[in-house]
Image 1 (cartoon, rainbow, N blue to C red):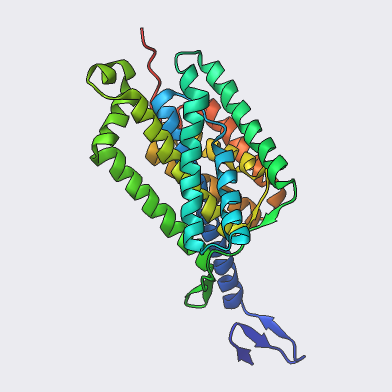
Image 2 (image 1 turned 180 degrees about the vertical axis):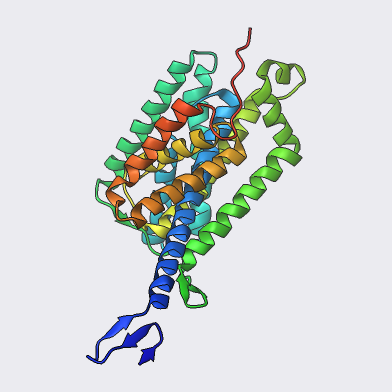
Length: 317
């Protein structure tokens, strides 16, 4: 006798039919894709910060992941300690990350603007370790559990249940990316950013305020990190001093894959890395999730160092 996706045999044991097995596989694959897109959305937002800063001053800001960590702690403090409404906690995290990014640019990077790139790179790594150690001193090494921002119900596509948090993450990331694209392509400040990216000296001769443009770029990149922190904490609700390290490195791989300095490339790279991680987990090799990401980095650097949408760097003479 047939009952839904099971067949009842003469021995009384219900065994899944071929149709039920196919549906189960389809559901699993769809869930893994959604999980991959959710992670990829966060990687893409963080990768955008890397790409924007690199496009302006050719700096790999390795402290970017730790700005996300600070955003997570701000969210935790706002809700767990100050009993703030989740909406104010979200705004506090984004604003805190924005101000921190601008402060880091003014205090650590601006004095070295004319220095060799290696000096900026070493400074960025130093800022990263400084933020991690300061956070450990202030908040301790123990993971702090972040209260839920909201109780988002699951969404059903027929018989398939999708996480409401995952869907909100995808929507929030898509809206953020659309707004950023509009900012860069259609606004006066966006044109200034593109001009500085192309040729700093020529942009300055045209009357563009270089310092203000760079500070604005850091502010936008750090605000995206704040949004990424909120979305990440919605999926993984805890804050630790080292949480930004691996997240930042994976976002860096996403930026390199898509073409560092390219906004659409950062989006593509983020989604690709998220899907790759999810598919590796789906086939039972979750212990290789991180390894696969860095294997992708090595392959990209060997095969196409400029990434999918990156442009070859021109040497100025």
